[in-house]
Image (cartoon, rainbow, N blue to C red):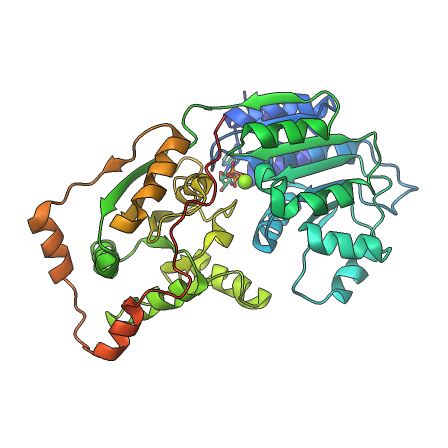
Length: 415
Ligand code: ADP
Ligand code: MG
């Protein structure tokens, strides 16, 4: 079925066509009718399968069709997301699809000045895409009215309902009307979180696509056994072999971001990095530099693992293995988005083998091992153009960090 055959308002259809959206993806095809009927939904589909449009399209149609021109003093749809970057990205999708309609959207998040956000809110906004912290602040101060909210959406729902966020979410839900539509979207979910989600809604419909393998089928993912000290040579080799490709490198900590960047710089490879400790403006600039292709390598912690849609990331490298097994799925899911294919490599040191086992338990299968053999391994290590032998610097970078630990954080059971 084509989007042109749906009974959507014409403006929305035009916007979809202009954006190159001709046919719905599986998750869109399955969710849209239920959302239009006003049902509560828990929708699980792999990374990069178009979950954003699965809610954005019907929400715009509903809000435009039901608009009451006399009343414009409250938010009608709230989309909650874990990061500011994701709030911006999802707002871009809403903005694009709601052009020339009566529906307006904006994103609000912490870490930037509140006043411009308040001024914009005062003009009246239908759809708010937000991180829970800033939303709570603005609601408490009376700048945002949620009494008339008809639709609540949690994107990356399992993460939003997890320990770090659940209190904020519960606090916010108290401000929302009981009679509303609630939609949960995620690529991963476990039993406990599923029960929690169900406890927040009336009669949820569960829609699940490709549940068996949570890793997107467009991602070819494998593991290479590399000793910690040699990882930089393997990354260097990948860059040399693919000089024009965008590579997203995941590391465990902020300090690791800086170290990997320094190691790459020593062999003439430019990169940018991003972690939760960076100023908001820097984070957005960094992501834009990578998005535009100005810089081909982004080194990031798990803050960027969820939801970020950069269509042409060719390689994801788990330079350090993730401590939460579900983050493996989210990290590798930054490549192979939409119809694109992508590759993901995990560099696994001996000390990280238990993290690999936890990942394999989580995804329910073994990760394919790239066998290099002694010769192949040695060749990659010796391939380096690292010449500047500032030994003290290198030793410092090889030293373990003070809190180095590779314990598995929590091994959630996938359902
Ligand atoms: P998810 O949230 O499932 O990880 P996104 O919503 O970020 O995925 O979408 C992934 C990519 O697929 C985006 O670049 C989006 O523009 C593209 N996309 C989604 N749906 C369609 C569609 N029906 N036609 C064409 N492109 C689509
Ligand atoms: Mg998403």
